[in-house]
Image (cartoon, rainbow, N blue to C red; front, side, top):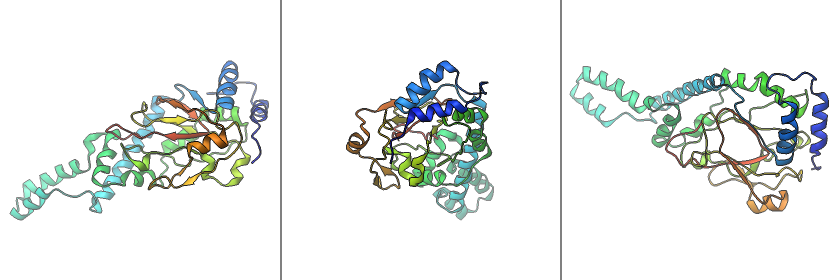
Length: 289
């Protein structure tokens, strides 16, 4: 792969940028201070308070519906089982109590009282692998589409890429249930998953957490300046019992010249653009979507 000419990409992008600043685009002083210094030099850019709470709340509401759909499917398939007490009640034919208890048991077994950021954790405990089923549900809610086509994020991308923009969601949701291998992504470059043709274009990645994140509940960890060599490192497959490709830290040092990593505890109302990254294990008791 040829060395990526970051300065040429950035200057070309700015040549095509409109004279009048569009909604969401960074002002000139931030472009100089952050876009060049942070994004093109360090490999990442953090923009605080980028999305409104209402925009992210719409995504949370759709996630609640997705978790409910998953819970119903698992319950109907017998993966989330009915309590033994229900069987006893059936044998004594206490129909009024049985019907009442069935409703309460179903609510209890579907864990509706736990809320968005804990419910999937409880379902996962009863049926391991539930987090993967939600991760691969192949559903793209309207709120997610609205976020991806949001005028402000497209305008910022225009500042980085120029006006000719294409986007793809890769995974439009990533679950983070506690102490779970399948939700802990190892070090990698995104191009490790993509066709070689992708090497020819600049691809910013937007990482949008839906609640405050830190090292304990599974934030993003960034390898600073990992893009500067313009190389794609040799990835291994697969990490543990997962489908993830992975980068050995020695390979990162040898091929990418990385000597240190940056841990970023991310707030829920901003976007981060990264080159290679890892998501840390959630060590708390609740799921982080």
